[in-house]
Length: 413
Image (cartoon, rainbow, N blue to C red; front, side):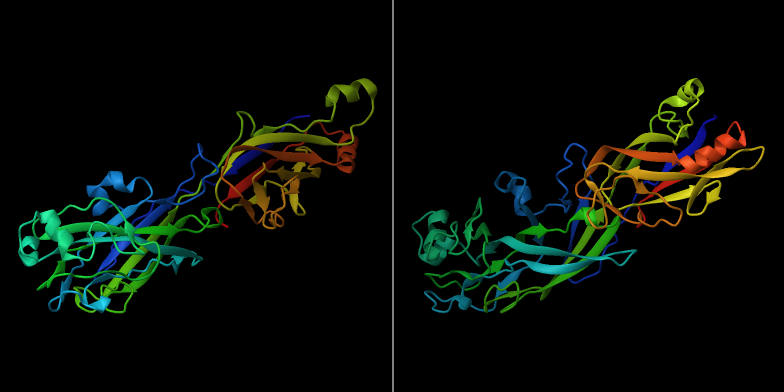
């Protein structure tokens, strides 16, 4: 019997993404990407790709690999003097930032699918500037460092509770840099011990944390969304009643890129499949016992981080499946095609895929999904001609049946 020719093709999603600037009074893009890593198949998370600026570029050793800072040209200036020993924290140096998790929706630019991203501000920093030397404000006779320390209720290096020490704090005669961690969304305030005629925060540094959705359940492409913060007294970024901002709003523009992998590898020669009896043709010729079925299991390797579906296309149709035929007589018989997928790939209900029929209408194979990134997992295509059809083929006296079957893996779900 001549071989059955089977063509196997795979659809690999390749995505090129462009980031367009978003016009806003004061905004920053927060970008992240998911690209499966064969060396770390269990780490199915987005990687933050937002450029780092501000504190963590100046003191990278203080931030390590887990803290990311952004510097904004957002200034705060006092509307009047900060009185010595003021009672109301809002009349001095106080900070309250959005340290609680804030959710926002991101939407796929093509499909309209939505997911939720969460963000929190985990640290805040700047550099305060005084109208003259700190030594002149506290009466002189001490170093710059000591003068700054005397100016406040405690050393500026160490933030008031519940804020926490964040790292290096460079200083000059009339300025002092700082970076404080903000574990909770509550007021941190310093009391002035001397009259401060005026004060400015020259910029705003902040660190942030992200909670991103499960990329394995997302489609390839870009998801975008925005989170708006208010700035000023009583707002999201609140520096008190006396320190007023240069902008009243801040927008984070989120851009999450999902670059899935879907790759199918068939061994050399695997696109040409010969269906044979269980014990080969020689057993029938020697014993005269007709084979009950003709079959072939064709293995393949699949790498997948995304949802996908499978479809069947036929050179010759037989109901909801394909057929092979004898060239001379045109006699045709159906070929049953099914698929088994490796561990880590399930159907839409979470069930394993074992000899799942592949049908022309796609029923039963419209959604497969990974529970983890599968890298070159071993799967099998099963081809079989049943006993009734085999008997017809042998009785017909035909010598060869051929036909082409195309199996498609499609990431466009």
